[in-house]
Image (cartoon, rainbow, N blue to C red):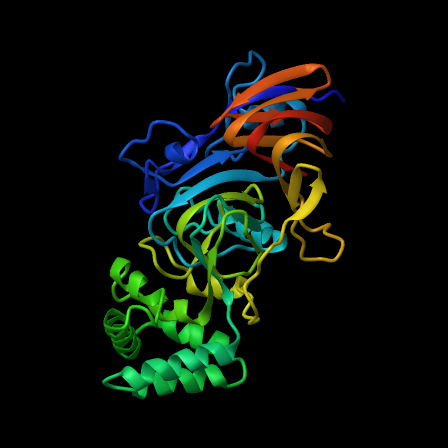
Length: 383
């Protein structure tokens, strides 16, 4: 099948945590004062990307229906001024089962209490566009959290709640037990969280990011949960891989995000949105470990690839993200979407040519060898 090129336009989502004018500014466009949280590029039915000029298809969802094909990923540009919710995403099996269950129960897909908006998984990677992208990602080693609890207890007016938290965490299965205790709330948890917020306000350099989170979400158990997670600050080009079950929250910064074509989110705090504690704990992976960095791999002379995997074969992750910075040739194995965040490029595919300026996006309909000329930062998502 011959691949075709077409410029597409994504949908900007104005979630409250977005940076005012953040997406426009990242793409070199005039910025507004309105929150701009995410630019979506893909076929997801809630915000399919539209073709700039096409008499055949209105958008990528229409293209999928017409061609009997599928774009098995969703590419985003994300810009956060304040923390996103603590969240995790399901496995493919959990997503399919949860979607079918909620469909059978007659829960409207736009209902507040709906967990599964579609039957797909949402593993994701994110690459920092600039220095200073902050995130919480995965449960840190227990010994590290115990050290933080001890340090807090030494500063507390009432150390007893910290002793209870410590004992719970140190026991067998302690991460899950401590996490569930915090989410359950109640007077004891409220007192613990209030003390953490007070201590962090007095000693702002020692207990990050709990202090900033307490300012944004006063009284939220996520203030304590954040101290159980890896806290990372990425430099430009550094990346994280967040597979199914990984608890995470982006705190601030701008990055390019690639994920499964899904909007399934199980939340656990730092949000006014619906929280389903039993469903969240059902999908969570409570295994502690280091932050899940994803190093780039050299692909060609002027291109690197971010290629995540949970299995050794990589067969469980149907996408990769390629960054091209100068003249190169990049072969793809299926549909692809390119987003130009800096510079200018010309792309040739099977006799077709498209010129991209900063802020533009292109869709490649099938496997192809892309002849790329120019310089800047072109991110290409493909299968």
